[in-house]
Length: 435
Ligand code: ADP
View: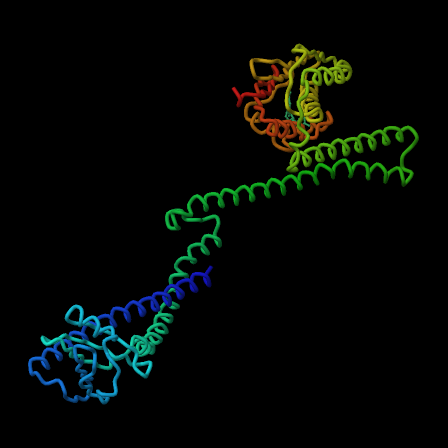
């Protein structure tokens, strides 16, 4: 950037110098021409007044021509040897209009001869000529001056452009160096939307990095407990410290811990799949009512063992653009929670309803409820109201995070109503944005 600006400044300066020189030379030359011709006219008039043409002067050429073009006298050459002069432009012009002018190259390139011719009363012509610098000579004489000016200007431009470039680039460098304190008032107003966007992205990146770091720490912690249990029990068994009766219980504990590890890892895999950019590819229109009924059927038996009644009371058909896999995931997680955090002999009512252009999925339970201060946070990864209870019941703390993720992906709103000791209702609405 710096180099580019420098180059441009210098280029513009040199271009201006060249153009100015050409224009100035042209103006100067035209002035010179005018001056020379008017001088020659004065000389010619003086000679005519005096009435003597045949004279020699140092720097003037005087030619006296008869009306038929024959040269009567020439101050520089022998008049007799000169050819008929009627074809000379300035003389032809003088014959026809009384006076004429002409410029011709002299023997040397650097000089031109300016001629002024005037018709006398008797039809003869008097011509005066003078050698003067040619346009090339004028240009050449200006060259050293032009070159010096160009060099000086280039030097000044380099300095100025260096200073200007620094002044332009400095705030940008400063901004880049200190993202957190991009001072919107002081930087370029044109850059404000740009800096805002960068700061926003910067913040997003930071917060995403924080979330990821926190998640990794949580995952490690969650994996540690069952692994430590497995390793502990196995160690005892290996040392032969477990009798036959306890063997069964220990094996059971190992199996439970392993199962827990599996569910955890499954949930983590699901979340990372949802995090991946291509999660939207698997979306597809499916009958959510049908999928929900199937999930209810799968869970009814296990729930009944704990005396909990799960019923489906919704429509038979409700199409949602979500895809079978994510639909099952979402429905299963919510119903499982409603069963898991229920009270003995509790009830779970599941519905999928069409209302206008909206599809509403809801799970209502008569369980323990969620205190208000936790309601916002239960959708966070690994957040549980009662950690030991969740773990005891096989929860990972990731179920609602997965649900929330699926809702974001399918443009659904998640709503929660809960009262501790009474129950919880979670309902998810698709199509709110399109109405
Ligand atoms: P978990 O695997 O622990 O169930 P979730 O993400 O599914 O994790 O839920 C987070 C927490 O929210 C749970 O630990 C529980 O405290 C609370 N929760 C979720 N659903 C319900 C519900 N239906 N009734 C009461 N509490 C619930």
